[in-house]
Amino acid sequence: MHYGLETTDTTAKQIQSESNLKHKNIAETEEVWSFLPISHSIMSTKPPLTHSQADINSTVASIPVTNSTVTATTNSTVHAGTTAGPGFIDSLLNKIPLPRWAIYAILALILLVVLICVLCICVKCCCRRKKKRKKKLDQQVNLKGLNGSTTTALVQPDVNDVEYGSANDPRGRLLYSLEYSAPKSELTVGVKQAAALKAMDLGGTSDPYVKMYLLPNKSKTYETKVFRKTLQPVFNEHFKFQISQAELSESTLVMQVYDFNRFSKHDVIGELRLTLSSVDWNHVIEEWRDLTEASKFEQENLGDICFSLRYVPTANKLTVVILEGKNLKQMDPGGSSDPYVKVQLVLDRKKWKKKKTSVKKRTLNPYFNESFTFEVSFDQIQRVQLVISVWDHDKVSRNDAIGKIFLGCDATGNQLRHWADMLSNPRRPMAQWHTLLPAEQVDGTLALKHTIKIPFTGKTF
Image (cartoon, rainbow, N blue to C red; front, side):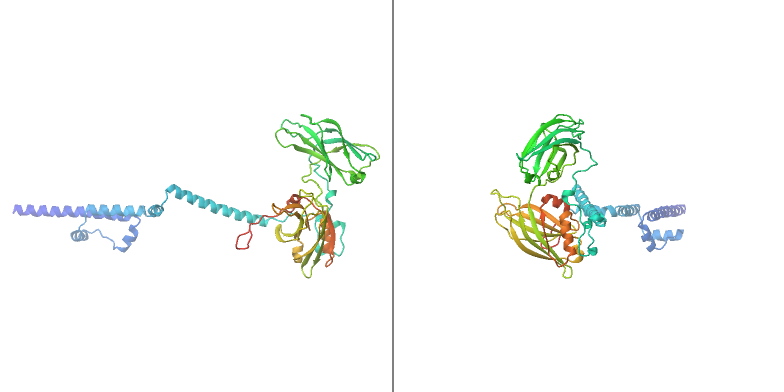
């Protein structure tokens, strides 16, 4: 009997220890389930566990649970929860047959292109929002206020009336002398001295000399000696030009003071331009004059062009008749040119419409008499610019521009006067001669916007 009691007690103790161990494993399992983020959804679908001894004994008896099972479940759950996000990106990158650095470089390049596109769009929008440049009242033509006659208030000063250079930038002074001998048809120009010249070198000095010539022919060019490292040179040199009295009244004397540079282009310190028709030749002229900024474009004789303008507001028709040209610049080696004329309309600083005349062979005084008609509304005529350009035709090489002019509300001098006469006399052709200007000067004044044409679409941007 003692043996039976001991066996029963031993069995009861084993059952109790197994129950305690299984109860501990279940408690650890509950703690793991409550720790994991994914356990909330799983626990919500299962009934809550009770901690009574009877339920534990019945659960333990019916479901075998081991430490290895709990541990495996716990580890797999934790690994799945912590690597779900990064694992997806890694798997996606692993599918691309490129090294990681190449993938990152491509992504950075795409981002850079997107940023550049956004920046360009922002800059373009800002430029469109900028206000139009302000114009002075005397440089505007109010088309609605035209009452049939032009006035000097509508016309800006001519090119010859505008002084060169700027008075706010002192460049020094030059003492010169002029004398003309009618019997000899000889003009004597004396370069005496200069004072307070602008320093062009790093040491605060200059190496000045004077260069002079006559316009429009510019047949001869003279230069004085170079004086080293001084702003007060004394030249005392005289130069003679053979010129008739008739040519003298149409000529301009140009005296330019240069800074000599041995290994680079010589810099212009300043210049004087004297219209000889206004000089009193009854006595010798000797005087000091302030130097001004050198003219950017040389006033060479490119020729003249005559054309007529006619605008009909009711029909929105602008008619340009190219009549003739004279004294055009020689462009071919034989001393002649093959000129033709381009007629172009510019609207809002963009090329709009264009036409051209026929080519006249081997002549400097062509006669065209060709008419061109454009459809231009009354609103557009206030913003449009008419560009007349004369070109020399070449069969082999590129055509060369002889000269240009432009007319419109932004023009000056004779060009503005002609445009105003056309607008104030509707339905009447208004003809006038114009002197051609360098193509670079006109293009710089117009400041046309560069456009790119998309092939096969006909669109520009």
